[in-house]
Image (cartoon, rainbow, N blue to C red; front, side):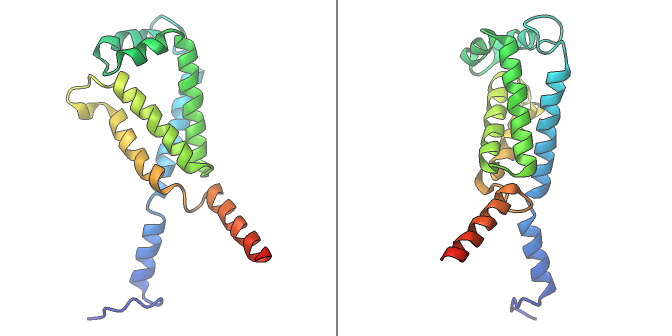
Length: 170
């Protein structure tokens, strides 16, 4: 039985590569999902209204009494369409930042905060709790907050460029 881990060991190379790229599918999924969610809200004429069927205002009024933080819902109801635009543009920024890996930890933190706010307001009353998807999204963002986008990202490219410059001047 071999116990060494020499660089020529194919299993080790595969494991290292799998570990290195492990978060990439999560990054792609969350990035695409949040870009889609932002675009969906921005292109839905009913959603951005203060009231009416399918509006952000009516949705927030519906969940107000069942949310964990009614004060957060009250804040959104001061300007429902403004809140709708803030969420939509926030989702777009988070999704794009996550997909291209630019300020990836910050983008993931933004995604986690959006998911947390939606969980505490819109999907808090889901019973059983796992029917509300915002909690699952919140948990999915945490590995990206911790690890960022170490491969196939603008952050990684910028990091490599800084290292090269330091090497040339050091």
